[in-house]
Image 1 (cartoon, rainbow, N blue to C red):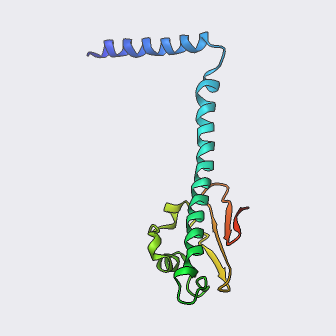
Image 2: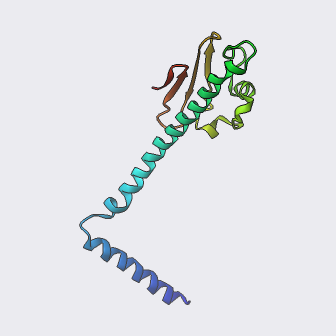
Image 3: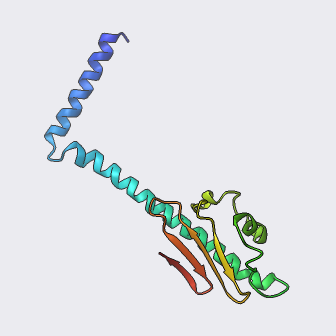
Length: 143
């Protein structure tokens, strides 16, 4: 295809596009830009839900821990002090090597406290809002 035919085809396509949108009552911003912005807004919601779902999985693993532990207690604070140690303690859970794969903020890390009979596990979601998600034996709470 020579350049003049290509130029003509592109011009015809552009004119057709403009005619279609000029016949509509909505603008290009309403038809194209706003839905794209909404889609990106939903991306943050999906990331927060993914982070929360992963916290629920870890909470379930922590809830099972006393059943298989010789001491029948939750892991100690000394055992879980960062994500790497968390992976070692819950080795059967096949957690990914990086926190970010769980949609957790690696810069915040994890916060874990336990007296053996209860625990508090906290992360920050890897989103622009950076919601904090806390898990305890009683449930999950987002801040």
